[in-house]
Amino acid sequence: MTEKRICRIEDVPSNGLKECEVDNGAPVLVINSGEEYFACNAICPHQEVPLCEGMFDGKVLTCHMHLWQWDVRTGAPIGLAEAPLEMFEVSVDDGWLCIRASNALRVASLFEGIAQETLEKINAIAEERQCSEGEVLYTVGDPAEELFILESGRVEFLVGRDGKVTSGGFMVRKGEVFGWAPLMENQKQRVAQATCKEAVTLLSLNGAKVREILEEDPRSGMKVMMRLSSLLTKYMIAAGTS
Ligand code: FES
Image (cartoon, rainbow, N blue to C red):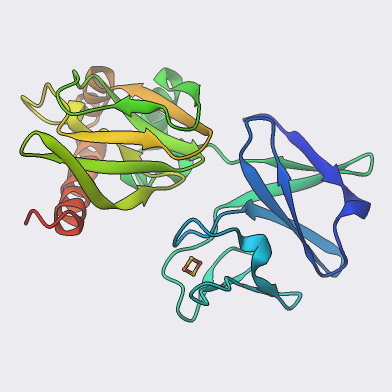
């Protein structure tokens, strides 16, 4: 992802917060802490609450809704918080604050720890895609050919059951992989629905090609398959299907 200017330095209050928009419409929260600036996804990782309405003491950001807290230098959760903030790299260019999101593939837990060469091969087949708010990426019964990694924005995941879709109880967040059916044997159709809850950037990977790459490196392939089984278990529990 390329670097994007988001606001002038002087527009951010001292030891304060400013919500900005990047050009795909996604809200970004810019934070000043003394001499330093940070930026994160402007929406709470818990629920759809704007973090600019939260409390900030110069170091710790607190969401006013359920009091989740984060260290703004790293996005690490503190106390009650169960998920980190999605942070962006910040730089200054001629008085402008700019952000750069790290490549989602490199932070995707599904591929964590696999051989660098294998990760590069997967990266080479990844295609970036921009989607609009409300866009349905796939629904139950669609052919399952691609898997996705979320780069920015939020995607809601609904589980198909008895001919209907019901909330799986979770949002997909940056670096999370979804639509993994093409990695599984004989899973040719979608059994869930994924919908963009805001403007979204994602990486799309052809499942058959990912399988080919992993078959060439069985050690990495085994790691990915073990993580995939853990992910499936987590989602089955969240959806109440286990
Ligand atoms: S919505 Fe932010 S902590 Fe619950």
